[in-house]
Length: 268
Image (cartoon, rainbow, N blue to C red; front, side):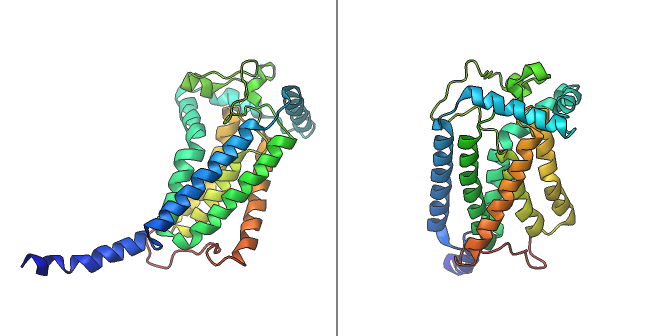
């Protein structure tokens, strides 16, 4: 009698597994390994890149002069307004610390499980963008605004975490480079995550929210004095070049498909 009850459950369990893991556990392990190796190498190369701190500060001041000439140097005013609320700054600091980890990784897991055909395209975008960013960090090292208090900037993330990193004490480590500000990968990641999700999810509200996500991250990185507007523009260009590169790959690699919206009636 027990076998008669349990037998119908096996096809159902198999169907659920095929839906969530269309390529099996081996592909999950392979994608996770690729992601961890790629991110570790990205962090390692970024951290050990030889950086001239004097050049990094010179580049930051050059950016300020460019933005002032264009009348878009509004970062100090934006941060001053945001710092009027302690709660707001705590939220923005949390978002800055988690945007490229909790949010991005969570989004990748969701795309893999619910829109697997599009996952490989997004994966390729992220890999290309990280490669472009490493070139930027090496060729154009730039001090973040938080290292320039003479221009009215503060470091609210340090106050939030209790970990203070100053340019005077910030020594290069194997996984840390305080002058890796150009391009802004917070902006690049936010765009490469929001584009797919705004296209793939079904509810209209979620489409709108994901479409606005890069603007939220733009406010976050400026209000926390981690990037200039200039950095953000280059971050957006990095995402655009990465999308173009992933599109080219998709024409020759069968698993690197273009984004495919969920069919009508599918969950999202």
